[in-house]
Length: 282
Image (tube, rainbow, N blue to C red; front, side, top):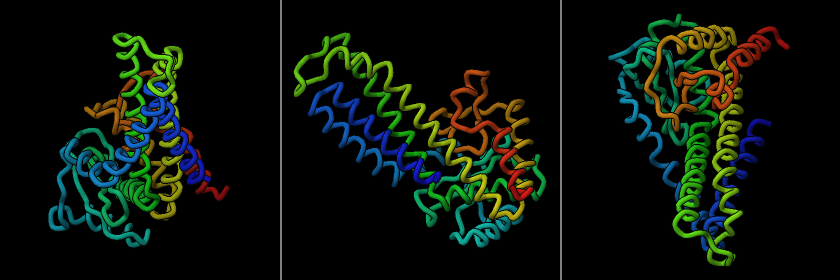
Protein backbone atom coordinates (compact mmCIF):
# COMPACT_ATOMS: atom_id res chain seq x y z
CA UNK A 1 0.00 0.00 0.00
CA UNK A 2 2.81 2.39 0.92
CA UNK A 3 4.64 1.55 -2.33
CA UNK A 4 1.57 2.25 -4.47
CA UNK A 5 0.94 5.49 -2.61
CA UNK A 6 4.54 6.56 -3.13
CA UNK A 7 4.44 5.81 -6.86
CA UNK A 8 1.24 7.81 -7.23
CA UNK A 9 2.74 10.76 -5.37
CA UNK A 10 5.93 10.62 -7.45
CA UNK A 11 3.83 10.66 -10.59
CA UNK A 12 1.89 13.64 -9.26
CA UNK A 13 5.13 15.52 -8.61
CA UNK A 14 6.32 14.88 -12.17
CA UNK A 15 2.97 16.07 -13.60
CA UNK A 16 3.20 19.20 -11.45
CA UNK A 17 6.69 19.91 -12.82
CA UNK A 18 5.52 19.58 -16.42
CA UNK A 19 2.44 21.71 -15.66
CA UNK A 20 4.62 24.37 -14.08
CA UNK A 21 6.78 24.41 -17.19
CA UNK A 22 3.66 24.84 -19.32
CA UNK A 23 2.47 27.77 -17.21
CA UNK A 24 5.84 29.44 -17.62
CA UNK A 25 6.61 28.67 -21.25
CA UNK A 26 3.66 27.04 -22.97
CA UNK A 27 4.34 23.90 -25.03
CA UNK A 28 8.06 24.60 -25.21
CA UNK A 29 8.09 25.11 -21.44
CA UNK A 30 6.41 21.74 -20.92
CA UNK A 31 9.04 20.09 -23.10
CA UNK A 32 11.85 21.75 -21.16
CA UNK A 33 10.28 20.73 -17.84
CA UNK A 34 9.94 17.13 -19.04
CA UNK A 35 13.60 17.07 -20.05
CA UNK A 36 14.43 18.63 -16.68
CA UNK A 37 12.54 15.84 -14.90
CA UNK A 38 14.52 13.16 -16.75
CA UNK A 39 17.77 15.02 -16.03
CA UNK A 40 16.95 15.31 -12.33
CA UNK A 41 16.17 11.61 -12.10
CA UNK A 42 19.43 10.69 -13.88
CA UNK A 43 21.60 12.99 -11.75
CA UNK A 44 19.91 11.89 -8.50
CA UNK A 45 20.37 8.22 -9.37
CA UNK A 46 24.12 8.46 -9.92
CA UNK A 47 25.42 11.25 -7.68
CA UNK A 48 23.06 12.04 -4.77
CA UNK A 49 24.71 9.66 -2.30
CA UNK A 50 28.19 11.15 -2.76
CA UNK A 51 26.88 14.68 -2.41
CA UNK A 52 25.03 14.12 0.86
CA UNK A 53 27.93 12.21 2.45
CA UNK A 54 30.33 15.03 1.60
CA UNK A 55 27.81 17.59 2.82
CA UNK A 56 27.91 16.15 6.33
CA UNK A 57 31.60 15.17 6.23
CA UNK A 58 30.72 11.54 6.83
CA UNK A 59 33.90 9.50 7.30
CA UNK A 60 33.81 5.91 5.99
CA UNK A 61 35.12 3.44 8.55
CA UNK A 62 36.50 -0.07 8.39
CA UNK A 63 35.82 -2.99 10.71
CA UNK A 64 39.13 -2.45 12.50
CA UNK A 65 38.24 1.18 13.26
CA UNK A 66 34.81 0.48 14.78
CA UNK A 67 34.45 -3.31 15.17
CA UNK A 68 31.27 -3.27 17.28
CA UNK A 69 29.35 -0.89 15.00
CA UNK A 70 30.61 -2.56 11.84
CA UNK A 71 29.78 -6.02 13.13
CA UNK A 72 26.30 -4.95 14.15
CA UNK A 73 25.58 -3.57 10.66
CA UNK A 74 26.92 -6.75 9.06
CA UNK A 75 24.72 -9.03 11.18
CA UNK A 76 21.61 -6.96 10.54
CA UNK A 77 22.37 -6.75 6.81
CA UNK A 78 22.65 -10.53 6.66
CA UNK A 79 19.33 -10.85 8.49
CA UNK A 80 17.77 -8.42 6.01
CA UNK A 81 19.34 -10.34 3.10
CA UNK A 82 21.21 -7.26 1.94
CA UNK A 83 24.77 -6.79 0.67
CA UNK A 84 27.06 -5.33 3.31
CA UNK A 85 26.67 -1.54 3.05
CA UNK A 86 29.41 0.96 3.69
CA UNK A 87 29.47 2.39 7.20
CA UNK A 88 30.26 6.02 7.96
CA UNK A 89 30.46 8.18 11.08
CA UNK A 90 29.50 11.87 11.27
CA UNK A 91 31.17 13.95 13.96
CA UNK A 92 27.98 15.54 15.32
CA UNK A 93 26.69 15.76 18.88
CA UNK A 94 23.05 15.41 17.86
CA UNK A 95 22.10 11.72 17.88
CA UNK A 96 20.89 10.93 14.38
CA UNK A 97 21.43 8.65 11.41
CA UNK A 98 20.61 8.29 7.73
CA UNK A 99 21.11 5.88 4.86
CA UNK A 100 21.97 6.70 1.29
CA UNK A 101 22.76 4.92 -1.97
CA UNK A 102 20.94 4.40 -5.25
CA UNK A 103 20.35 0.68 -4.63
CA UNK A 104 21.19 -2.05 -2.09
CA UNK A 105 24.52 -2.76 -3.82
CA UNK A 106 25.65 0.84 -3.22
CA UNK A 107 24.16 1.51 0.21
CA UNK A 108 25.77 3.48 3.02
CA UNK A 109 24.64 3.77 6.63
CA UNK A 110 25.85 6.91 8.41
CA UNK A 111 25.50 7.54 12.15
CA UNK A 112 26.53 10.48 14.30
CA UNK A 113 28.90 10.22 17.24
CA UNK A 114 26.07 11.50 19.43
CA UNK A 115 23.90 8.53 18.41
CA UNK A 116 26.46 5.97 19.48
CA UNK A 117 27.01 7.82 22.74
CA UNK A 118 23.45 7.80 24.12
CA UNK A 119 21.87 4.58 22.82
CA UNK A 120 22.07 1.12 24.29
CA UNK A 121 23.17 -1.77 22.11
CA UNK A 122 19.57 -2.87 21.49
CA UNK A 123 18.44 0.68 20.65
CA UNK A 124 21.35 1.14 18.25
CA UNK A 125 20.33 -2.10 16.55
CA UNK A 126 16.83 -0.70 16.11
CA UNK A 127 18.14 2.46 14.46
CA UNK A 128 20.53 0.58 12.17
CA UNK A 129 17.74 -1.82 11.19
CA UNK A 130 15.54 1.19 10.31
CA UNK A 131 18.26 2.56 8.02
CA UNK A 132 18.81 -0.84 6.40
CA UNK A 133 15.06 -0.97 5.80
CA UNK A 134 15.35 2.27 3.84
CA UNK A 135 18.05 0.66 1.70
CA UNK A 136 16.03 -2.53 1.15
CA UNK A 137 12.91 -0.54 0.25
CA UNK A 138 14.94 1.81 -2.03
CA UNK A 139 13.53 4.79 -0.13
CA UNK A 140 16.67 6.87 -0.45
CA UNK A 141 16.45 7.16 -4.21
CA UNK A 142 12.73 7.90 -4.06
CA UNK A 143 13.17 10.61 -1.44
CA UNK A 144 16.09 12.21 -3.28
CA UNK A 145 14.22 12.36 -6.59
CA UNK A 146 11.15 13.77 -4.84
CA UNK A 147 13.22 16.49 -3.19
CA UNK A 148 14.95 17.34 -6.49
CA UNK A 149 11.67 17.60 -8.43
CA UNK A 150 10.07 19.68 -5.67
CA UNK A 151 13.10 21.97 -5.78
CA UNK A 152 12.79 22.29 -9.57
CA UNK A 153 9.12 23.29 -9.21
CA UNK A 154 10.10 25.97 -6.71
CA UNK A 155 12.80 27.17 -9.12
CA UNK A 156 10.28 27.43 -11.96
CA UNK A 157 8.00 29.41 -9.65
CA UNK A 158 10.85 31.87 -9.05
CA UNK A 159 11.41 32.10 -12.81
CA UNK A 160 7.72 32.87 -13.24
CA UNK A 161 8.04 35.66 -10.71
CA UNK A 162 10.91 37.24 -12.63
CA UNK A 163 9.03 36.78 -15.90
CA UNK A 164 6.02 38.61 -14.46
CA UNK A 165 8.20 41.44 -13.20
CA UNK A 166 10.34 41.92 -16.29
CA UNK A 167 8.35 40.31 -19.10
CA UNK A 168 4.74 40.73 -18.08
CA UNK A 169 3.68 37.27 -19.36
CA UNK A 170 2.15 36.35 -22.72
CA UNK A 171 -1.17 35.08 -23.90
CA UNK A 172 0.10 32.80 -26.68
CA UNK A 173 -0.11 29.20 -25.49
CA UNK A 174 2.77 28.22 -27.75
CA UNK A 175 5.09 30.86 -26.34
CA UNK A 176 4.07 31.18 -22.72
CA UNK A 177 1.35 30.84 -20.15
CA UNK A 178 -1.17 33.48 -19.25
CA UNK A 179 -0.33 35.96 -16.47
CA UNK A 180 -3.09 34.49 -14.28
CA UNK A 181 -1.72 30.97 -14.71
CA UNK A 182 1.78 32.17 -13.87
CA UNK A 183 0.54 33.88 -10.70
CA UNK A 184 -1.26 30.71 -9.62
CA UNK A 185 1.86 28.64 -10.28
CA UNK A 186 4.02 31.10 -8.33
CA UNK A 187 1.84 30.77 -5.25
CA UNK A 188 0.41 27.27 -5.37
CA UNK A 189 3.24 25.35 -7.09
CA UNK A 190 5.91 25.39 -4.35
CA UNK A 191 3.37 24.76 -1.59
CA UNK A 192 1.78 21.83 -3.41
CA UNK A 193 5.19 20.35 -4.24
CA UNK A 194 6.25 20.62 -0.61
CA UNK A 195 3.07 18.92 0.61
CA UNK A 196 3.49 16.03 -1.84
CA UNK A 197 7.15 15.63 -0.87
CA UNK A 198 6.14 15.55 2.80
CA UNK A 199 3.53 12.86 2.09
CA UNK A 200 6.13 10.72 0.31
CA UNK A 201 8.65 11.11 3.13
CA UNK A 202 6.16 10.32 5.90
CA UNK A 203 4.88 7.23 4.11
CA UNK A 204 8.43 5.95 3.68
CA UNK A 205 9.26 6.54 7.38
CA UNK A 206 6.33 4.45 8.56
CA UNK A 207 7.37 1.68 6.17
CA UNK A 208 11.00 1.75 7.34
CA UNK A 209 9.90 1.63 10.99
CA UNK A 210 7.85 -1.52 10.35
CA UNK A 211 10.53 -3.23 8.22
CA UNK A 212 13.28 -2.18 10.62
CA UNK A 213 11.39 -3.68 13.56
CA UNK A 214 11.20 -6.98 11.69
CA UNK A 215 14.91 -6.89 10.84
CA UNK A 216 16.10 -6.27 14.41
CA UNK A 217 13.53 -8.69 15.82
CA UNK A 218 11.95 -6.44 18.45
CA UNK A 219 9.90 -3.28 17.73
CA UNK A 220 10.58 -1.97 21.23
CA UNK A 221 14.29 -1.53 20.41
CA UNK A 222 13.40 1.07 17.79
CA UNK A 223 10.54 2.56 19.82
CA UNK A 224 12.85 3.23 22.78
CA UNK A 225 15.52 4.65 20.47
CA UNK A 226 13.05 7.02 18.81
CA UNK A 227 11.93 8.29 22.21
CA UNK A 228 15.52 9.09 23.18
CA UNK A 229 16.31 10.67 19.82
CA UNK A 230 13.22 12.86 19.95
CA UNK A 231 14.19 14.21 23.39
CA UNK A 232 17.83 14.73 22.42
CA UNK A 233 17.08 16.46 19.11
CA UNK A 234 15.17 19.14 21.01
CA UNK A 235 18.20 19.85 23.20
CA UNK A 236 21.12 19.36 20.81
CA UNK A 237 20.88 21.24 17.52
CA UNK A 238 22.49 20.34 14.22
CA UNK A 239 23.42 22.44 11.21
CA UNK A 240 21.47 20.51 8.60
CA UNK A 241 20.41 21.41 5.08
CA UNK A 242 16.58 21.50 4.88
CA UNK A 243 16.76 19.76 1.49
CA UNK A 244 18.25 16.67 3.15
CA UNK A 245 16.35 16.74 6.46
CA UNK A 246 13.97 14.02 5.24
CA UNK A 247 16.84 11.52 5.08
CA UNK A 248 17.49 11.44 8.84
CA UNK A 249 15.70 9.08 11.21
CA UNK A 250 14.49 12.09 13.21
CA UNK A 251 14.16 15.64 11.90
CA UNK A 252 17.52 17.36 12.56
CA UNK A 253 15.98 20.83 12.27
CA UNK A 254 14.64 22.66 15.29
CA UNK A 255 11.51 24.79 15.28
CA UNK A 256 8.13 25.42 16.81
CA UNK A 257 4.60 24.38 15.86
CA UNK A 258 5.00 25.61 12.26
CA UNK A 259 8.06 23.42 11.75
CA UNK A 260 6.19 20.39 13.09
CA UNK A 261 3.24 21.12 10.80
CA UNK A 262 5.45 21.11 7.71
CA UNK A 263 7.85 18.40 8.88
CA UNK A 264 8.93 15.67 6.46
CA UNK A 265 8.71 13.22 9.37
CA UNK A 266 5.54 11.71 10.85
CA UNK A 267 4.62 12.61 14.45
CA UNK A 268 7.01 10.77 16.75
CA UNK A 269 4.18 9.75 19.06
CA UNK A 270 2.43 7.97 16.18
CA UNK A 271 5.61 6.19 15.09
CA UNK A 272 6.24 4.91 18.62
CA UNK A 273 2.59 3.88 19.05
CA UNK A 274 2.69 1.84 15.83
CA UNK A 275 5.85 0.06 16.95
CA UNK A 276 4.37 -0.77 20.32
CA UNK A 277 1.26 -2.08 18.58
CA UNK A 278 3.50 -4.40 16.52
CA UNK A 279 4.97 -5.70 19.78
CA UNK A 280 1.53 -6.30 21.19
CA UNK A 281 0.59 -8.24 18.07
CA UNK A 282 -2.26 -5.95 17.05
